Image (cartoon, rainbow, N blue to C red; front, side, top):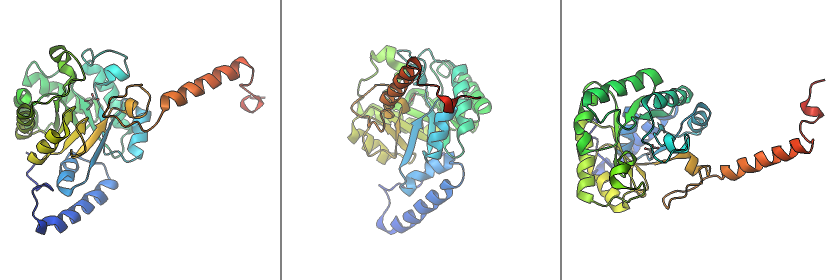
Length: 293
Ligand code: KIV
């Protein structure tokens, strides 16, 4: 199990300076060497906000890693943002391994977590352990993520029992789209969400993604757990945040309310491609400076 380290919400005043020292220690230590699963867990007690972005290829992963992002998630969102599909359901284990290996090879510091795609862990705990094991062996990633809480507790337990670090994902679960009907339904059943999060923690998950839930519920769950919560559309009180990188870079054109867009790469790339087309058509490129004599 990962806890219980005292979280900022539970610490009496007398522990504040110890907490500050721990925070500095975590920040200093984790800046100069790979960020590990224990670093990820301890960040919560140290009051360090965790950062996570999705990555699917070597180049992007190496940019995010060098920029200091703590964790790179090879999300099965790649089904939508890389493959152009409507849901994440068709993504295969082989595809996750293909992308996961590129990202893990690029990451010098960031903790790399790879999603278990739909139907690669739901059949049985044995299936889940075998497939999670393949991901760790074949990609070099440090951990896997699966969707679910209460209903996946046994599977999480089976993975934890063989030292496979696993993160859970509760709230909106995109792999359940056929059951819930749409990808954007805000999850408001507080008792269920808390039960899911607690079940995942008790089973041995080292962290939990909270997707698309009201901020006060996310705050409550975060205070109740000793492992970090990573929010997406779950407000500012989570222990960390994750965004789907083609969305935050302004590449995908997807603008949900919870998204802050940090760049406009779609425009930048469109302008660049248009300028290139024009240059070639008008004989402006290649010029003498781009040509061999
Ligand atoms: O697949 C993914 O990118 C995810 C994030 C939305 C957390 O699971």
